[in-house]
Image 1 (tube, one colour):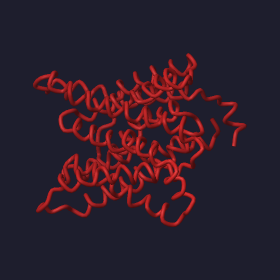
Image 2 (cartoon, helix red, strand yellow; image 1 turned 90 degrees about the vertical axis):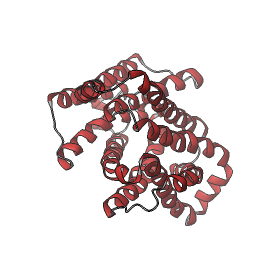
Image 3 (cartoon, helix red, strand yellow; image 1 turned 135 degrees about the horizontal axis):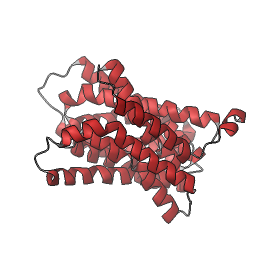
Image 4 (spheres, rainbow, N blue to C red; image 1 turned 120 degrees about the horizontal axis):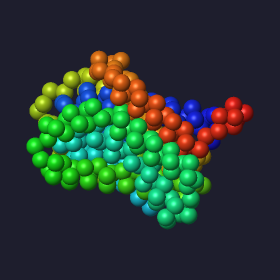
Length: 301
């Protein structure tokens, strides 16, 4: 893993962590499913620009549209809808822990179906990272779960989220193993545009017609579509190519750290000892799972 890959990794963590801020602003006004649908639609519109002005991107999409359809469904459309359903009854702390299972699922799929074996150090790092996420979110997790009326009622929504994580992991492995010869932009453009077509009827059906939507809410859904989805997925697809699906999806371990930091800075949310200790544990686990070498990073470009 080069220094450039590591910078991309943390830059992507930054971009995706802003999604939590955008969700906090936009979801109350649009509704979770409508917001998720609009997110994909604005991302698709953004990627059309890359397609319209570049014949190479158009040719890549035409030649690999079947695989790009699968990636778009597994990595974007299906997970966004599943997480939207899950978010209606499962608190954010639990969702963050469930989302952190993506690298483990990705590693399992890679080693089982694609013969991409993981080192013991990487497996240990993933386990430590997930433990760190539990510590990070533990105060909110236990406080809000005590208020739950019936745990069994939350099991199905949690299952939706886990299925969404399987989608992310599957899409990442398909990208690495079957689209490795295609550049990140046509992969991102093709998969998102196809996903936006699928999500269009859902967005039209769920849109809160007759309700006044603030400029802040519109700004949040545009920003999450353009920056935290379209541009971010270009970086993610490049990262998958460079370091593999398991290590790339380890980003889900780091995102909660940035999300809590921005919540503290922008939303005046509390920053407690659980956040500090959990962040340290996550960073150590991520260091192991990425199989980094400090000496190698110093020498790398």
